[in-house]
Image (cartoon, rainbow, N blue to C red; front, side, top):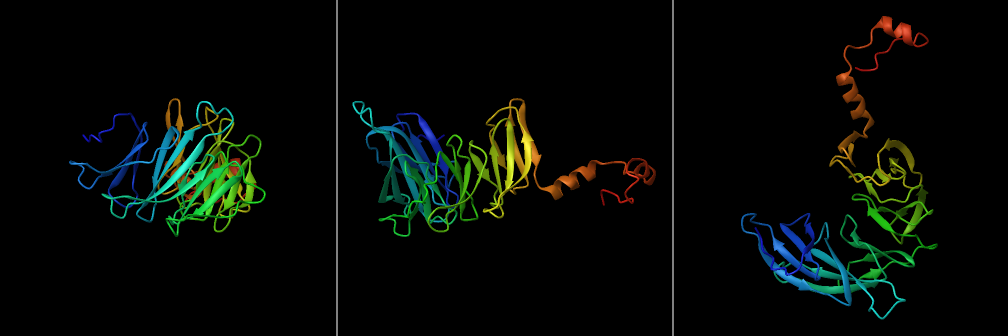
Length: 298
């Protein structure tokens, strides 16, 4: 058991994708960096506090490619201020020496959900005027790309892990935008939906839930997305996740987890493995006489 010496409740735990490190946040805004190198003797390497204003919550994330993390703090205005919206401060921290993290640049926005792109060189955030991408080539001076014109509405966003695209939505009646982030954010297409979505590991499929269904979109051509499947579910926003290889989707239902194969070739193979006995020539002639016999399965 690890005691991170946190007087408040732990609110988030994030494991690094490329180093034996974990970030732990508390309700007081303190961030602890833990060493996971020896699971039997976990150790606190550093403790960080960057709290500003009337803290609401703290989120942290690791860069997937560099020894960098960001700590995002969302704060409410003072109780006497009834006009301002929550503000977000994003602190960029160099953890190349985990025992001595160094604060580098900072970003301030109205509110945001911060995510790294797959190469770790960009993070995205949003504010009232739309979606922003921040270039972290210089950690001390993050550079914001131009805001898209027209602004891209953002309530949530999902970044593809292997391609320079993201999906964003959440505004009632606005749909879900597929956005090119290879340069300044540029909307490529818009599909129906509102609830948060996720990309498959290879970035070729996008899954979103809406109106008691999970919709799967082929976004191999992000400018021309094609809906390829609709899965009925028992709630309007069902939690779901792709399998690690991207061939299936796990959907949470009130009666348990449901696994759905979304790769057509694998689905056909699975059906054929269970299809015994095979259809005979006589059965084929009886049910589909207009077609020449061809076994549906190898």
